Length: 282
Image 1 (cartoon, rainbow, N blue to C red):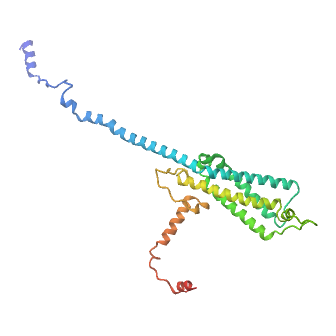
Image 2 (image 1 turned 90 degrees about the vertical axis):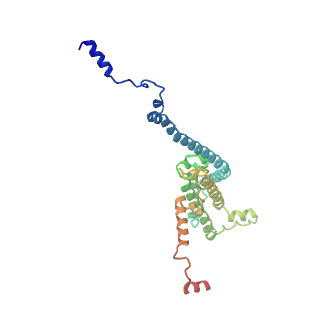
Image 3 (image 1 turned 180 degrees about the vertical axis):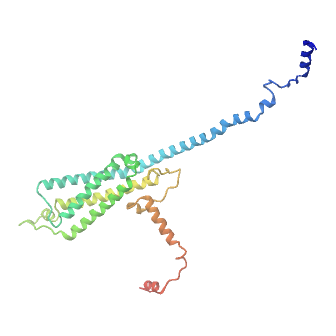
């Protein structure tokens, strides 16, 4: 066979070409699984990012509203606390001047005045950061409002106890010969140290009440403890008076224990014993 005959046979034996080969507009190319998965992947990937952005915007809005509400509701107790701190500072200056002038309290009441003076300075040092920076200060952000409230409450109890002890122990000074005016009698009963003691108790009570009001507002808006969800996002726990002496988690734990003991099945439907009946009759 010659060369031309061999090429003709090879041409007739080759398979026919597909009619859709190279056609880009064919249905198979348009509806292939690979093309569908590539087109839907960005859409599925965009849905979580959109939800995350919406949640972030909601959190920022609720946090901003919580800060605004806390600043508005706490403005009055903050000013009351600042006035009380200024009064305590003024009392410290009066005590220093009296000591400089040689007016020293008696030996029997020296310990009481020392306690109330120490309590005033402790409250000044611990409460000053909160009442100067407000609800957005560093004291709130690092979680120091609770310990500060506990310390102010304890120092108030110390102040009130010192005043009660003074009223029991102290005796009025004798009047000078020929002194009959009310001013002389008042000076004999109340001196500069006694005046400072009574004023210190009043300022401490105002400071304790103001600190509690600020703390309660921070708790109700969800800004304290740090990391809590603001109002409108999560559930706000009820503020208990136990938080004057312990943290919010500890107060909640104590309340839960009391509720669990009150609802225990052992106490439910128990009949009173003879000893309980005797105590009830007494």
